[in-house]
Image (cartoon, helix red, strand yellow):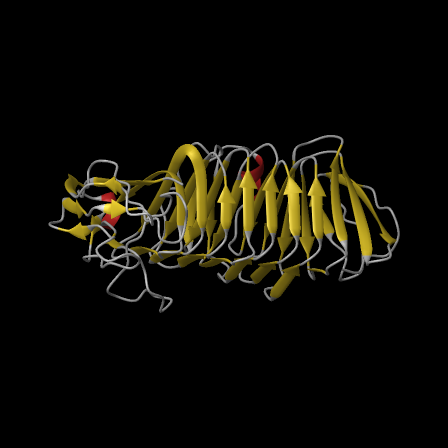
Length: 366
């Protein structure tokens, strides 16, 4: 990132300072900033006096470079990456307030680390006034929609993490940690409430989430227009994990996935799972509402559970001890391939417009 070493003071009224194309333009709020050279790159320190909005025509935070948002007033800083291209955040972002990056119509790749009270990352657009007023806002693809890929570390120290993009990918090195909720939306439109305790609403009919990372939060909410594919770790401890797709969408969970918490979704199990680890170790579908859970045994031959039939409207857990010393992992596998051409562990079809299908719940704990 190239910013000249200087300090700019802007109290928004009618004028905006003249800056070079690579510099951010403060479109609302009050802030000063300066950039210094370091051994590994550059360090830009923003002193924020009020809720502020920056427009960036060019943005590329290299590994070894830093952005610091230091709040002495206000609570939020919004960064709009408006060039419509691809943006790379491979350095370090730290803040004692809430930090957002929006790349409407562009692609945002996060390979570095972000630590702030709360964090929002999106390759969709949002009205800054709606974001700042604290009453919720809508992410949409009105200016185009691209890829949001997180393959780095994102930490919300006193709030929530929100990720949104029509194509949302959390890579294998992606780690999301929040004291509040982690919310992920793979769609061209989503309504985001001010509180992470409230679920994402009004999702569009397009988009997907490919999740391969690790998440630790008090609650996890994942929405997609077409498909959610889970290959990673979702850890909500004793909290809830919601996964929902729109229209004829489907949800897939690979047998490598680890889920800790109570998982809830709307829809019905679409396919009969098949055994994947030990022979007959996976629950077999008897009907749309009943699973037959087989006898599970430890490596030494002792029995964990006896075979039984259970209704899917109840919380169900099935574990395998082949690869781990304790029964901690659900082990079902699919017949079909997912949108991303990966095998999956279970499939389910979403409901149209939140219609009449009963909510199905599945619990898996480590």
